[in-house]
Image (tube, rainbow, N blue to C red; front, side):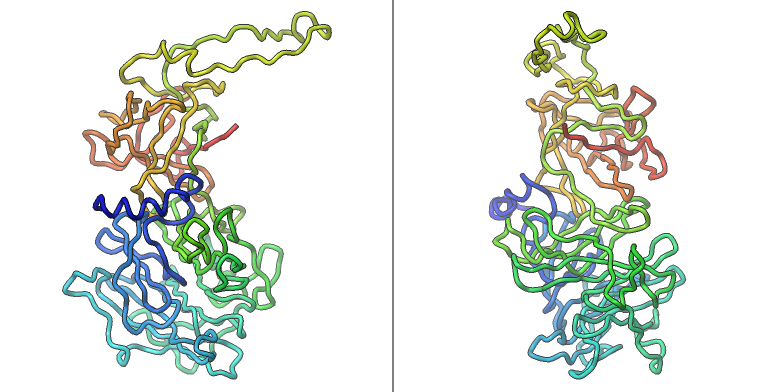
Length: 485
């Protein structure tokens, strides 16, 4: 990323980054985004009209090459070594009509600079579903899913009637059975898609009003079924074909109108949802691409949180101990409260002074200081400040993690160890990826580890040691929580 680009785009992102990291930075302007797809180390998505976005790291986005002939609300799915594109040819009331069609086609690569890049001309693409003006369905907003058994389905529809699903041939993306009727699976939503998790198919739809900027009420809801053709029932037993749907994500402070859900599984325990905000208050109320963690609670998906800038206790899920600098313990004076305190009820209450950074920092070593875990006592060596940086990974920034009130930074070191360095310099071993996991906890990973080519994460090794190791979602030592008091 060139410095001139940073100057122009980071100014736009500064408000969002200092508050919460809930939308992408750069120029992420899009509506109805396809599920984010990765190709040769870059990330891509397209929206209504074929407009494209591209990202080197999954966090900073710029305008990318458009796909000619794409009408509205595309979706993208990688199958084998090819990319399947599905989109709608108007409908949705666009142009004053509900007449539309769902079209599919294949591409070998998403990289426009590759000699293999290209999608077939419109005349060679396949229509797999359609709607007429007087029909009780509107063929728009395609959503693709490949089942664990290798079956391919597409969902489509809007508020103008039913959401429907039909099965496609996974080799050709043509309709599998041209005589089989579409199956009605939901009403009162649009921008639908399906995902599979732990034995259930989840139908995600977008409820509420679209295309009204800060006044849009778009929100993402879901139901689930053990079959990709439904019925899809929500958490209180309502069928989505009768208007049911459990909330996945609505508005959040400064962001309105979540819609067009897409899912990316990075690895076990690390999942992301892509979507758009109808209005991003920090970007002039424009529609922007957003990517957040997926958290699964009681068998249902919900949008998680990227850690916002602030001061935290970093708490091990293993035992609840806190990450801290391994400095000498400095006792506090006063505050002896044994058996009710000396003087009993006659003694006036006073505020015991908290230990302050200036009370202890002169006793800390000047060079690197080791890291350990210990009981949390809200001491200065246990308070960490997280600040989002201008680089990132899919859906989240890298962070610098420093002792609050200082520039002393948490860093990876050789031999898979941890340390803190006196000054944050922006070196890769000082930049931390923070991913919320599907169980709601977090993992912390340095961008690089000196002398090691493996991707390693922060681990609690026993009750007092902190180290780096390979991430395993089933290992509680890899999981952390962020607490603010």
